[in-house]
Length: 431
Image (cartoon, rainbow, N blue to C red; front, side):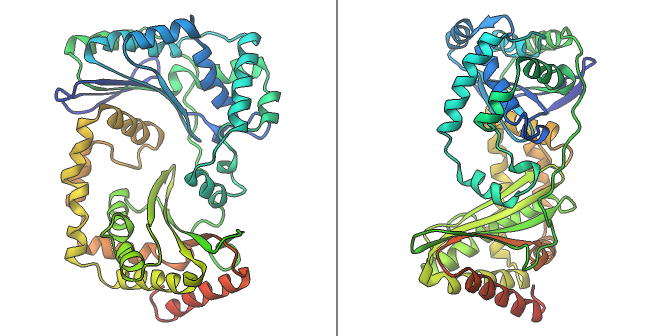
């Protein structure tokens, strides 16, 4: 069955897709809110509210909530992002209605008390103290420096301490409401069960309003030069960690950029892996990531090298880009295309992955990315070598390029060496 997307009268965005071939159903309830919507004073309030739901879920205290989840052989998972909050549960089809009734209770109107908030704040303080920053979060903190994205999702102990009970319940009423929500169901359910969940959703009272999407570009987006291109951090090792960013505006369709990045830097047979790892043994691995944000995208390419190889490895990196822009071969295309055409249908075997992808594409980032696997497959199949070459020439240019480098090498030497490479390539008409 094809994916369905409707806007209910009470404001809920309802996404559904029936998958007869799987043995599970994933249900998620999502809200457009996060640290992007906060300020320095209430930073962390969204994440705190995510926690509070598990302390009291509508009329269910924590112990009863956990009991009901575990009797179904499942648990509600929750995650707060910069721009949305997601609650999800995956169950067997026979528990679908029971799980749906349980998770959608978070759409009901209720308030928390001071006692509950005090207990949960202690949990969040400990989480903030023990926070381990992931690599992606670390590079985000530099790429988005001095923007709304720089605020942490959990906030600080000081900001969370200052959040009052009134602030919490007001924030919940404003953002955790029907008009600002998306409910998604993906998996194996009956037509009768579908009608039941539609009826349950339609009985939820309309509340609040849809939050305005926040588009927050990094500083100097597509305007990079020697004065704003670099984030240079000192370390005390003989290894330099390098991340190269490319700014990508919304006019470039996601699928072509995704295929381009795969050919360039994903997998053991990618062009950069073959040159930097296999041919010259500069690095053990190359990590490439194309990230979507509201209004734009970012391609990041990361690798580590010995300081003795720093200059030469970057020379080969930039030379590879120049060669890539000159020619993308049929063989290059064939090494990646099946991952995005044939393999695209793997998503239809995973109710959880499909659910989160629909929410991200059709609710959070809408309308910038195609969500349905079959339609994505069809779009990838239409991409030509000419399309790829045009994108490579448009994207891999100096004004889109910035770097995050952690090294104990002389900062001036690093900057001058890289700028000399860029200037040389620019003078030859390649950059």
